[in-house]
Structure formats: C-alpha cells, structure tokens
Image 1 (tube, rainbow, N blue to C red):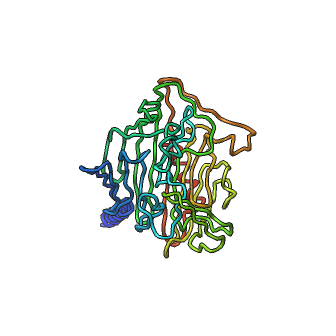
Image 2 (spheres, helix red, strand yellow):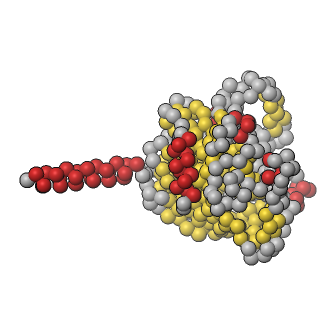
Image 3 (cartoon, rainbow, N blue to C red):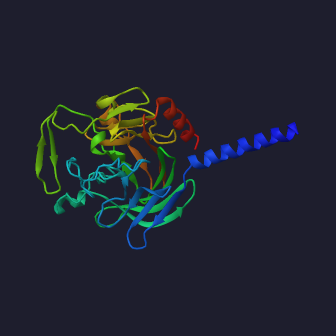
Length: 347
C-alpha cells in the first residue's frame, strides 16, 4: 500500500510539473496572409509581431513588436505614427537586418525619403519566397530575399529563419540569416549595421540636450532639452557599460530597459560566438536606435582597427541573434541573460 501511495504521489508530481511546463510554454501560430505580403505571429492567441515584405518597403521588417502583455515596444513612425513620438530616421522601422556599405551600396539608409536622383546609391532587399511557416511551442518562419541594386541585379541572396517562443511574461525570437554572394562582395567597415531595432518612445534615454527631428516631409522640429518627459530608458551590456557609454563597446549581450505603463519592460539582443567579429559592437543610441554591428570596427575604435568582410562569388556568411523581450515587476537579470547567452551559444 505504501508503495502504491508513493508511486501515486510521484505520478501526481510528474503530472503537476508537466502541466506547469505546458502553461509556461505557450503555443505559437505563424499565419501567412492570403492577400498581403505579410506573415503574422501569434503567441497564445495574441499578436507578437508581423513580418512585412511589401514592394513599397526597401527592406523586410518585423513590425510592430509586442511584449507579452501587449505593449508595443517599437516606434510607430513611419508605418503607424503615434502622437508625440520622434519622426527622425524614416529608415528605422521595427526590427530589420542590413548594412550601410555593401560594395559601395547603402542598404541601411534607404527609404522613401531618399530623392529619386540619389536612389542609385542605395540597395534594396526584396523578399521573393516564404519558405516555411510552422506552428507549435516554437513557431518558425523562413524566407528567401535578394539584396539588389536599383536595376534589380542581385548582389546577395538572403535566407533567414526565425524561431519564435514565449510565456506569460517573455517573448523570444532567434534569427539565423545566411547571405550568399552572387558576385564578389565587400562589406566595407561602416557605422550603420546590421541588426537594427527602433525603440518605442518610452525606452529612449532621457536627455537635457536639444533634439532635432525631421518628419517624412522634411519638416524639422526642435525639442528643447529636458522638456520630453516620456523617455526613461537605459542600456546595460554584458561588460557592465550603461547608458550612452554602451555605444561603440563590445559585449555578448546588451539590454535596454524602462517603464512602459505599470510594467518594467526590457529588450535584450544576444550575440552568438559563431558570428563574425564576436562579440559584437553595440550601435546603441540614446535616441532609440538599438543595433548590433560587428562590422563597424573602424568607427567604434576611432580608427585603431578595422574590419572588411569579403565574400567571393558563391561564398556565404551566417549571422545569428537572439532577441528577448520581458515585462513584469522587474526586468530580466544579468544572471538570467548570461544563462540564456550560454544556451544560445550552444544552439
């Protein structure tokens, strides 16, 4: 009888643990639109983000991006402007991946705001195939895109896979991007790249300096320093750098954090040891640009060293990143991020 009772107790514990695990890992649904160039990602029935790849955009983006509580952690402008938010840098949309100097073409700064007579200096990323969508406790989205010039000549072929997961207070996306050269390619050392995220107004760092913002019509608005009381964000890197001091430094991870409504919200980007020039430099700006750029060494080291990644025709390079979004009564800790980075490094 005692054995039976003990076995029953153990079975109950196993069932309880299984139920807790099932509650923790929420189901992901990846849904391709039948009428638009869009793929929606839902976690536990709530929209996490949308992959947008219409011909009207110069690159594919994930926009908007929500925390688990529904809060939008990305800036709305220029796709869905919200009252009071900055309108600078119209090429900053949601989450994207590109680079400022690919064999002389600027993929990073291209947007509708570039004059027609200067468009030949910029590159496009055109998504032509959705390769996979998969539902489950980990949702998957894979696509193929071409990095082209204005004449639609292909320089690079991109194959990207996203893996999405989450629980009650956390959202995770892993991005694996392989770039294959269709011709000889040089990623010339430049400041603007590669994985970029434009933050919601609240996650900017407060500033006492005057700020100039240019809207999509070229109008300039000056915001006097200290009068914008919405920003309350801060940066922290794995190397212990904080605030604006995070910019141009290396680290395995960097997180931005602040209050959004009643919750503490954080977004962390984790680098991978197999990425070029690991650990990455952080192109993390107080005005709301949060980017990982391993290929801007000359700028970030004040010319002390540089890196120029070159690919021969047919060669490829892969970049891997993990983005972690948390909300709740506190932000994700350094210890938790170190543990997540170690697990991601083994992936």
